[in-house]
Length: 120
Image (cartoon, rainbow, N blue to C red):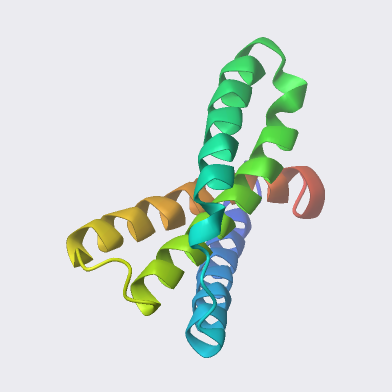
Protein backbone atom coordinates (compact mmCIF):
# COMPACT_ATOMS: atom_id res chain seq x y z
CA UNK A 1 0.00 0.00 0.00
CA UNK A 2 1.61 3.21 -1.15
CA UNK A 3 -0.14 5.50 1.32
CA UNK A 4 -0.03 3.23 4.40
CA UNK A 5 1.84 5.71 6.58
CA UNK A 6 -0.63 8.47 5.74
CA UNK A 7 -3.57 6.17 6.47
CA UNK A 8 -2.19 5.15 9.87
CA UNK A 9 -1.28 8.67 10.96
CA UNK A 10 -4.69 9.97 9.88
CA UNK A 11 -6.40 7.14 11.75
CA UNK A 12 -4.41 7.76 14.93
CA UNK A 13 -5.09 11.50 14.74
CA UNK A 14 -8.82 11.05 14.17
CA UNK A 15 -9.11 8.50 16.98
CA UNK A 16 -7.38 10.81 19.45
CA UNK A 17 -9.38 13.87 18.39
CA UNK A 18 -12.76 12.09 18.44
CA UNK A 19 -12.10 10.50 21.84
CA UNK A 20 -10.90 13.81 23.28
CA UNK A 21 -13.86 15.81 21.94
CA UNK A 22 -16.46 13.28 23.10
CA UNK A 23 -14.90 13.04 26.56
CA UNK A 24 -14.65 16.81 26.93
CA UNK A 25 -18.30 17.10 25.87
CA UNK A 26 -19.38 14.73 28.63
CA UNK A 27 -17.17 16.41 31.23
CA UNK A 28 -18.43 19.90 30.34
CA UNK A 29 -22.14 19.08 30.05
CA UNK A 30 -22.39 16.30 32.64
CA UNK A 31 -25.10 14.63 30.55
CA UNK A 32 -26.33 11.22 31.58
CA UNK A 33 -26.14 8.65 28.78
CA UNK A 34 -27.31 5.65 30.84
CA UNK A 35 -30.55 5.52 28.83
CA UNK A 36 -28.50 4.49 25.79
CA UNK A 37 -27.59 1.10 27.29
CA UNK A 38 -30.25 -0.91 25.42
CA UNK A 39 -29.71 0.95 22.17
CA UNK A 40 -25.95 0.44 22.32
CA UNK A 41 -26.32 -3.26 23.10
CA UNK A 42 -28.71 -3.72 20.18
CA UNK A 43 -26.29 -1.81 17.95
CA UNK A 44 -23.47 -4.08 19.07
CA UNK A 45 -25.49 -7.16 18.10
CA UNK A 46 -26.26 -5.59 14.71
CA UNK A 47 -22.57 -4.80 14.11
CA UNK A 48 -21.58 -8.35 15.06
CA UNK A 49 -24.15 -9.82 12.68
CA UNK A 50 -23.18 -7.33 9.99
CA UNK A 51 -19.51 -8.22 10.40
CA UNK A 52 -20.33 -11.89 9.96
CA UNK A 53 -22.47 -11.04 6.94
CA UNK A 54 -19.75 -8.91 5.39
CA UNK A 55 -17.63 -12.03 5.04
CA UNK A 56 -20.18 -13.29 2.52
CA UNK A 57 -20.89 -9.90 0.93
CA UNK A 58 -17.68 -7.81 1.04
CA UNK A 59 -19.44 -4.72 -0.34
CA UNK A 60 -21.14 -4.26 3.04
CA UNK A 61 -17.85 -3.77 4.92
CA UNK A 62 -17.94 0.00 4.51
CA UNK A 63 -21.49 0.18 5.83
CA UNK A 64 -20.63 -2.00 8.83
CA UNK A 65 -17.53 0.13 9.51
CA UNK A 66 -19.61 3.33 9.41
CA UNK A 67 -22.20 1.92 11.81
CA UNK A 68 -19.44 0.60 14.05
CA UNK A 69 -17.68 3.98 14.24
CA UNK A 70 -20.90 5.65 15.31
CA UNK A 71 -21.64 2.86 17.78
CA UNK A 72 -18.28 3.09 19.51
CA UNK A 73 -18.54 6.86 19.67
CA UNK A 74 -21.79 6.22 21.55
CA UNK A 75 -20.00 3.77 23.83
CA UNK A 76 -17.34 6.40 24.58
CA UNK A 77 -20.10 8.84 25.56
CA UNK A 78 -21.87 6.17 27.63
CA UNK A 79 -18.79 5.02 29.53
CA UNK A 80 -17.45 8.52 30.12
CA UNK A 81 -20.89 9.63 31.29
CA UNK A 82 -21.06 6.75 33.76
CA UNK A 83 -17.70 7.76 35.16
CA UNK A 84 -18.51 11.47 35.40
CA UNK A 85 -21.94 10.97 36.97
CA UNK A 86 -20.65 8.50 39.57
CA UNK A 87 -22.63 5.54 38.24
CA UNK A 88 -19.48 3.48 37.80
CA UNK A 89 -17.07 3.02 40.68
CA UNK A 90 -15.02 0.14 39.29
CA UNK A 91 -12.28 2.10 37.57
CA UNK A 92 -10.59 -0.97 36.16
CA UNK A 93 -13.73 -1.89 34.23
CA UNK A 94 -14.09 1.68 33.00
CA UNK A 95 -10.48 1.63 31.80
CA UNK A 96 -10.98 -1.71 30.01
CA UNK A 97 -14.23 -0.53 28.43
CA UNK A 98 -12.67 2.71 27.23
CA UNK A 99 -9.67 0.81 25.87
CA UNK A 100 -11.98 -1.48 23.89
CA UNK A 101 -14.05 1.46 22.64
CA UNK A 102 -10.99 3.34 21.44
CA UNK A 103 -9.45 0.19 19.94
CA UNK A 104 -12.60 -0.64 17.97
CA UNK A 105 -12.87 2.95 16.79
CA UNK A 106 -9.23 2.80 15.69
CA UNK A 107 -9.78 -0.49 13.83
CA UNK A 108 -12.86 0.70 11.92
CA UNK A 109 -11.68 4.15 10.87
CA UNK A 110 -9.13 2.93 8.28
CA UNK A 111 -11.86 1.18 6.30
CA UNK A 112 -13.77 4.42 5.99
CA UNK A 113 -10.69 6.49 5.32
CA UNK A 114 -9.44 4.10 2.66
CA UNK A 115 -12.80 4.09 0.94
CA UNK A 116 -13.61 7.81 1.06
CA UNK A 117 -10.67 10.05 1.93
CA UNK A 118 -7.24 8.60 1.45
CA UNK A 119 -8.10 6.21 -1.38
CA UNK A 120 -5.54 4.26 -3.37
